[in-house]
Amino acid sequence: MDAIALGASLIMILLATVVIRAVITFVPRGRRLVVTRRGRAATVKGPGLAVVLPGVDSAVMTPHEPDYLDILWLAATTADGVAVSVNGLALASVRDPVGYARHHTSPVSATVTEAEEAIRRYVSRHDLAELADPSDDDLRELSATITERTGEWGVEVALIEFSRIEIRLKDDLLKWADGFAVRRAAALSARPDGSGPAAPDGATSPALPHTDSHTVPGTVSHTVPGTGTLHHRMTRGGQRLAVLARGGERTLFVYGSGAGDTPLQTIVMERDESDHLAELLHSGSVPDRLAALERRLADLAAQPR
Image 1 (cartoon, rainbow, N blue to C red):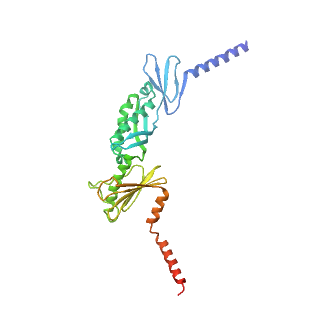
Image 2: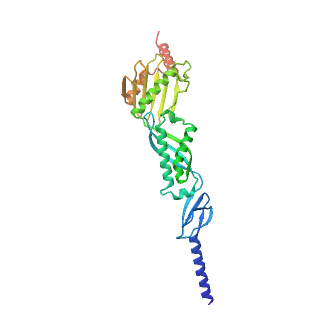
Image 3: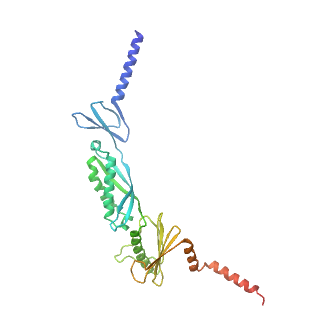
């Protein structure tokens, strides 16, 4: 009898364990459990232990803490017709767990889709130079615009950040950068100290977004990562020329004396040709010329009189 009683007790313990495991759900920190029971309104439970009746309740786990959603390689076109690729982040929070749980598709995917569409519209309303430094007001307005749609499934987008905006070196971009660089070079050369005057309306000249640039009097260089470097030169006499360095190829653009941004002639050179031209134009450093002069004097002193 004792053996039978012990066996029955073990069976009851096993059944109780199975029932508890089926009914009790653990809600971790940073999550909430939305439980919907037939004929009753949904309730939000957690963190901690929550009771969910199999066959009676339906439960959906939802995030409770803010999370960053990646916006990667989003193709868009600026207001001035330049194709760009946008990378950034969206800070999203679930403000209504019940609405989040009842959304018919993945709320995360839907939020990313809405953010991408809103960013495309934002880019289409701004010029390329304006994207280099978006204002805080613009980004807050963009976040609010996204939240107007994502709020339907309980998600609030509190922040949008652009981590990188990339541009490809195409004909339309070359034309855009060509005109910008020439105007910038003319402005720089107009001031003796090379710092360049302010624009006619008092605003400073914009910079290419996400490019490494350095400027000396009369010269402007723009580096497009992974593609090439475009150098513009304004001589003291007012003549203009540009050199595009791309891999082993060098392209020389020669301009007329007018204010037009279209070059009169384009010359493409291989590396050895451009190196030879550089040697012809290079006057040599001061130490090299002093050394050559010393050698010449030594040769003259060694000659018999």
